[in-house]
Image (cartoon, rainbow, N blue to C red; front, side, top):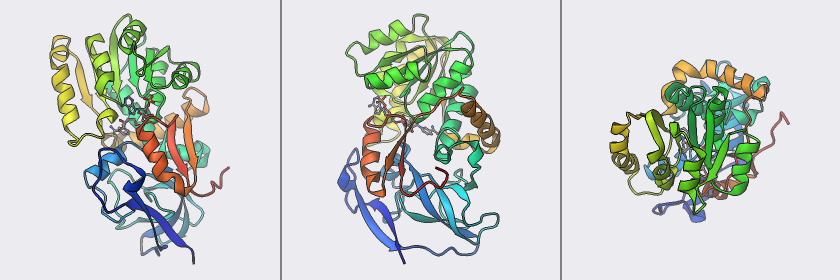
Length: 347
Ligand code: NDP
């Protein structure tokens, strides 16, 4: 009987950012599904910046597999509506196998569901046709509400959420400016994603470059980063602008997870007040019940029609999980970061 490999947090204090010895690989017997549960084999593991926050806040039980959203295939089922062979979205984490269903711990809004491979590649179920797409839709369309001709700025523009958020604003007829790191990411943002401009936050002239790319100021800002990127955006807000705080990845190494938002609000306060800027916080879980089902259909259509393009960075092999996660937090990913840990039967 093969065993179940999984990665867990090593038994040592966490530093500000993960390093290879933050993680430890362990083996366990493959679990047997109880009543109302199904056993699934993991195919794709989604690596997302919020997972570092989970670890630092102690959300994950010590010794348990590191949390992650996954795409898998049912191996054995005692769960109504799920059969062996079904492809599913679930939360196996950094493990080769996992259970889903009754009594299996998961964040409340990450509800296991069967995938319809006609809606897109199954890896996209943890990305554009899934929670990342919904995040971009909620933050950009429902909160930012860009109008034709307005200037929209998106940070981490080539990443999982950013690339979708910018393209949704483009579909609204807005002028879209991305902020990204390396030159090849900026080229991808303008040439492939068809943003109107993209500036690099790594350039010594970043502030001037951003101001030059936004000659009419900024009407909507989709914040993924914080830090010096926010500093460059702040003076450019137009009266009546909207800002969505989707994430503040530059601060995920800070000791206090909530201090960055407080500091950002304090830093921006005078301009927000003077220019009547509306700041929205964003938590994708708040939008699942009311918007996920219709959003998934709409987004699958936009992707199929080529109206929304989507780049994935898929690393191969279970061993690669820690390195890929560390890299993603340092900007080493180019597109949505995933690790494929077993064969994808749809390819
Ligand atoms: P990405 O694919 O965008 O990967 C992270 C990217 O952030 C890196 O590639 C890098 O891009 C950029 N980055 C990292 N550190 C810095 C830094 N110090 N300064 C500038 N840029 C940096 O990740 P996701 O799309 O998965 O996530 C994007 C954001 O969305 C995150 O903040 C995440 O927490 C948030 N999020 C929020 C959700 C919500 O419900 N509010 C749900 C899902 C995600 P580059 O090389 O271009 O700098």
